[in-house]
Length: 184
Ligand code: ZN
Image (cartoon, rainbow, N blue to C red):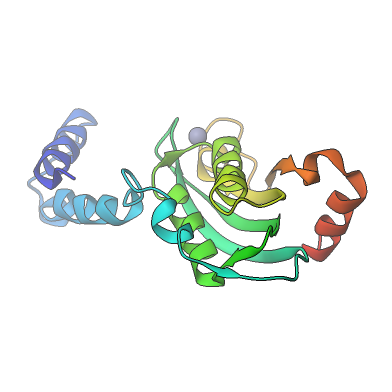
């Protein structure tokens, strides 16, 4: 990531909106934002294979559900945060991933300019394809700062998205069972 370029760009934005980038409170701001972006956009250029390649063999193929995983992302339309909870489920096909790897996968896709719908789909596809699972289901509940701070201003409203693949897509009962385990 080009931190100098971010610093330069933030300085330009401060100038463009009519503030003085040299006043005391703003002198360090471009540097702080650059370092923050390094973390917030740290998922760019990374692949979920880094986390999901290592699996454990499991004979039992019961549904795995991980719910209430907190996430923070940046809306790609406004570069403002959206955040909330990810609930995920998959049907193992002889192998499972460590639970911390699932959380890292959520982080990897959250830490880039995103859309909630796209984030939901990308996590579901990673669980389906990289774990060779029989099915995956991801539900995301999120609040968008671009809805709260500007435009229609509806603080507290939540956007819910879901994406199903494999057996979750075809089997309605299975999907219902997963939603129940997710507490939805
Ligand atoms: Zn937005």
